[in-house]
Image 1 (cartoon, rainbow, N blue to C red):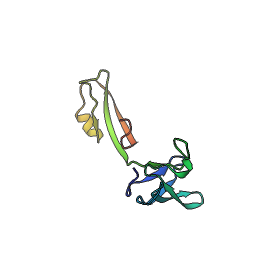
Image 2: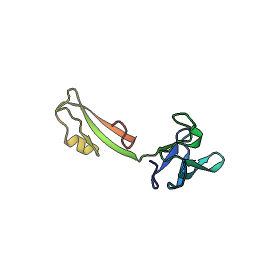
Image 3: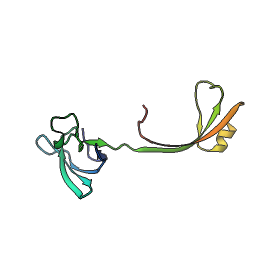
Length: 121
């Protein structure tokens, strides 16, 4: 279900969208606009985000896809020859990784993480 206040993009070309209303009448009650190379173009969608241009296909290029927040982190991870306790510990600062390192550490890796919320779950 498409909701006001959430961000969406189109399936193909990932065009930016604006949703104005979700309570219109008929088969396409979601009203908004898509920003393409020519400017903002008015469009309507079904409650599930499918566009008129989907037709009888399972999906179409102007169907809506929710844009989820991105998670960005920089962490330091201690690496060992053997996994201790079956877990990996990540630290926000190199100094913390150094202080918490076990004997036998073979590397301390700096990772920059930039993922969409829920990715990999």
